[in-house]
Image 1: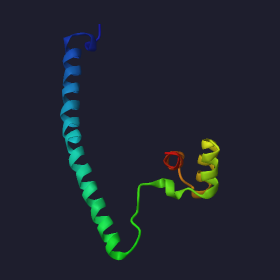
Image 2 (image 1 turned 120 degrees about the vertical axis):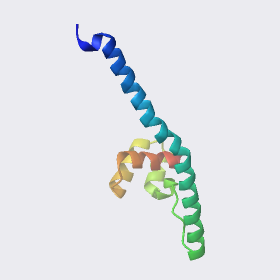
Image 3 (image 1 turned 30 degrees about the vertical axis):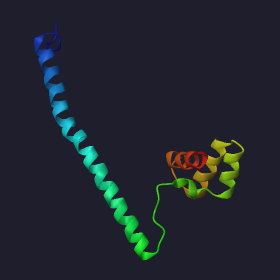
Image 4 (image 1 turned 90 degrees about the vertical axis):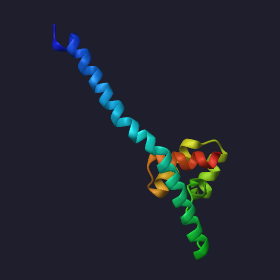
Length: 105
């Protein structure tokens, strides 16, 4: 019989779980506040871009697609479009997939 099998093991597990909850809960509670802060910063950036007369950076990556990628998407060749986008931009697989899927929507 090991120490983990007895009541001390259960107590240790309970203490670990309580510690984990006490650590994670404050982090989770900050997420809405941080999201609101990011939205405010985005709005400020958009206002500055408008004042300067420059195009605002957008999270819409579908406009980053070139004509060949758009043609591949139109033909239903999503994987080929992702591959072409990666080769052309040097983006990661995830970024290229997001860009192509943004062009499909």
